[in-house]
Image (tube, rainbow, N blue to C red; front, top):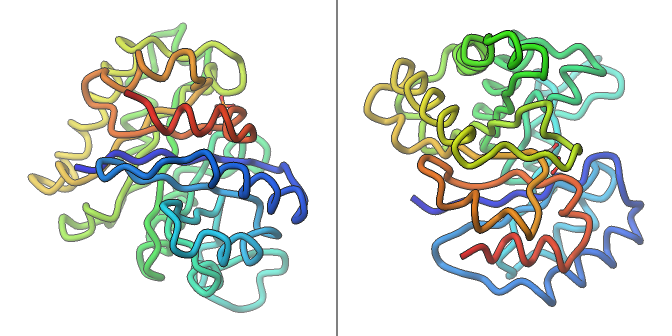
Amino acid sequence: MRRLVIGNWKMNRTVPETVALVGSLLARLSPAADREIAIAPPFTALSAVAPLLKGSAVLLAAQDLFWQDEGPYTGEISGVMLQDVGVSYVLVAHSERRRHLEETDRIAGLKVRAALRTGLKPVLCVGEDEVERASGRAFTVVRAQVARGLEGCVPGEASRLQVAYEPVWAIGTGRAASPAQAAEMHDLIRQELRAVLKDSARAVRVLYGGSVTPDNVDELMPAPGIDGLLVGGASLHAEQFARIASYR
Ligand code: PGA
């Protein structure tokens, strides 16, 4: 299975800033056959970035989509529109959306379906918060997020699915999960994937995200069950993201 490293820029960078950052990123990245690299700039920059990435080793990702394909949904962006501008991957239910926009597991499920229907590859984001971990509920929470987010998915869709385990307490805090903590949760996610997708679950990539940096990447990537990374803060710095993407 090819590994996957995605840079999630969140609500950062204007179009000119994006063009500059993509330029310095492309100058630093060295393509490798065993991994895919993608970046998720804000919606407003997607059409400017798409032509810059053509012919490069970097794929385009979006940070969200709506669950309908078109219609009276003011302010929303559909999978069809993302396809139209050259997007391959789309994040679904990132914890910041769950928290600030009250996205639920039901919404996550609808968005995963919409992404698959419109030819995109969804990255379902899951992860427990600090209180849930401290009270011993992390496994139950994550298991339910995976099961509900993938409701209706069938084995034939497995190769287009990704799940990103991002413990909320690790996001933007500088406190990444330890390789052992990540491996333990990735194993649980894999079990849940098998329950839904049977043998095809093997084809789903399970990414880790939360304070990934050049300093911890070489420790995290070899941990059992880590098939890639979702990188936030460090992906806004070309040299850091390039270093992460060239993990050993
Ligand atoms: P971080 O964010 O790398 O800045 O912790 C990760 C994410 O939110 O995807």
